[in-house]
Image (cartoon, rainbow, N blue to C red; front, side, top):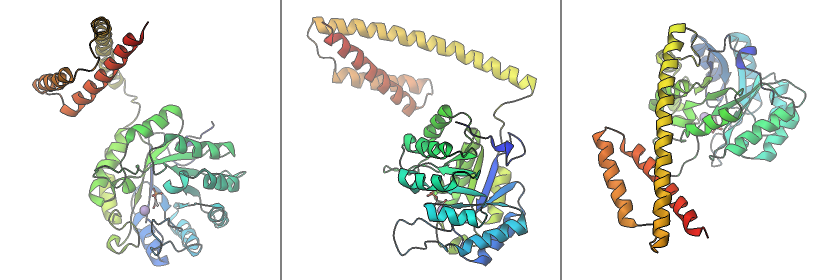
Length: 360
Ligand code: PEP
Ligand code: MN
């Protein structure tokens, strides 16, 4: 898959994060231009976002201003030099966005989950070299996200960027959409050249959490941020709780620590290599200990088989949990971490013993 690095077409260097800001939705010409004017005072924001067609969960909510908003974005571009981006969810949106000179298209979370819509959009952009940003689908399904990316790549789009905006989660969570960072990391592992930026606004759902989510994204080496900003968040027609005043956005952006994924300074890389060597040694020890544990489990399996003892022994399992938690506490290791590891060890132990039992 041919994917162009951000610095070949939009940022100045591989270390510059791509910053995108703007309101959740374009509401009036004045709101759009005033927001753009305020955001233009913040260093390094490259792209102005605004939803023109808003996907709303329930009807009779604000569904966007439609085509007229694209004209306001043209003014933003001319007056403030931003590149512009809007969400497109079908062929018609895409045709209109192209016609009105929108610079970047983004595919929203609800659309990424629908291959028919994604293909419809891909068919319209075929033959252009417009950049397409693809949000993760609402549900934690990496294959759907990958599939959408592939559909654009297959029609010849090479300026592709993934946007991590969190996932629907039915359990208890502080977030509007749970980050599940591991899914973004897995995507990066499959497509190492694919830039991934984070949308902390839709993950957080409330202003107070945006800084921490953005910092975490940068710490994980993500390539940029898309953050919602509105000149009067309390009066916003959508996503009022998560939109930031341009001034507050500026504060956040100035307080974030931007790390470099690779370090050029020699002393620094030497030190890092030293630490990594230490980790290699410890991991090697860990593997050997795991191997030892496995061998003992096989012996236990044989013994249980011979003596007709069941594999799972509730009291023993309860004892393992209790004692390991005590040991962990003494070593100041986090309880949940140790619980997870014990769970994994136990599952593997049952699997091995089942294999032993089934052996003829
Ligand atoms: C948005 O960016 O305003 C939006 C609707 O996002 P998402 O598709 O991530 O819900
Ligand atoms: Mn929004």
